[in-house]
Image (cartoon, rainbow, N blue to C red):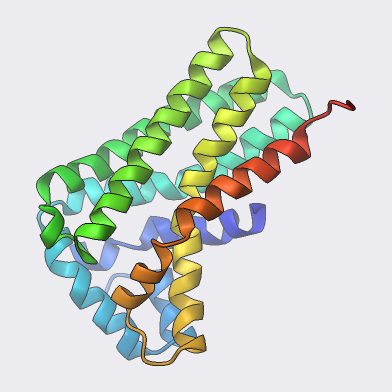
Length: 218
């Protein structure tokens, strides 16, 4: 997971720069252009341009802070495992604040964009809204559990929160892999495939991570 997070962080930070300034560097587009095709990238940019235009600044905030979260998550997890309490609390506070700020950008995009006009359509809009609610709800529950002195419950809520955040890099992996396995798929097709299983996948992943960190012997 840490490798995926570190690899995705610069992709997230630069992903929307070309929409604000055509020709700006975007690592994700560069990778997709070489793993799939330049035509796939051009079609993806074209499909996203109009829905993103009305909320570009909030989306850039969301994307840049999302890249930061990809770095903060492993720090928070490793500091908890190694019992670096002060570092864990500091990283956790920054993580929670960053989640709220990043999700505020996503919420503005969803609020300004009718579902039928969203990138990949109404079904994808609903999935994004569900991920938004799940991310904010889980991080809030995690913070409350920590404040009330329930560290195990706090850990489980934060793992679920990070599971929701991992939908972003996992979706990009599918953008690169599925068109190679099934030539002819465009980005809208890939998104339709992804929305059928990513939610269940991240919840199951959070459950496995929670069990792996459980030190109880009986």
